[in-house]
Image (tube, rainbow, N blue to C red; front, side, top):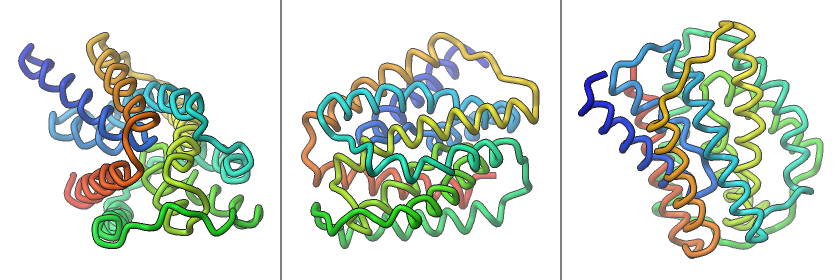
Length: 245
């Protein structure tokens, strides 16, 4: 990659990490979009997106949990089956354009709902454990298949169902993304026997964006701003899934 392209690439990764981490996400769908725009090989894109997800999700979880925005009781039922299902999804390599278009439409609809009908920042109670375990299994499979950590599906669900507040949803999503990204990466490695190497500027860009974004989201941004950021994330991710090759 030419030097000027490498700089633009790293800056793009930084911006994606900053925006996504402010809402407890790690940015996989954004990284995939950036790497697709730079015409990188598909075999490179999925594992690299998951590696960057691990970096940013780790920072995001630490920041939100440190600020008191995390609930283990809400987290573990969703994560119980999501991890093995994410491993399976990472191992599978399916021709999935139709699948991506359907997911993209769902994300666009969710983003539109956040813009025009944002959910109230109040709860009506956590879901039954069997419901959470089943949903977690489905989200884990989706996260592995799409090369994401599942946060773009998980956070809107938590908020629209009013199972928790905005900032706790961000903290829970960050750890959900972390464990599913790790499982998806291990599944992908089991299938391909290859993990691409990352350059220091790329890792540094993701680290810097993750630190700044999660610090803003966990301690400084009000929940209304976080919801607007989440709407932008959902709309970008939906468009990427529908129109990217």
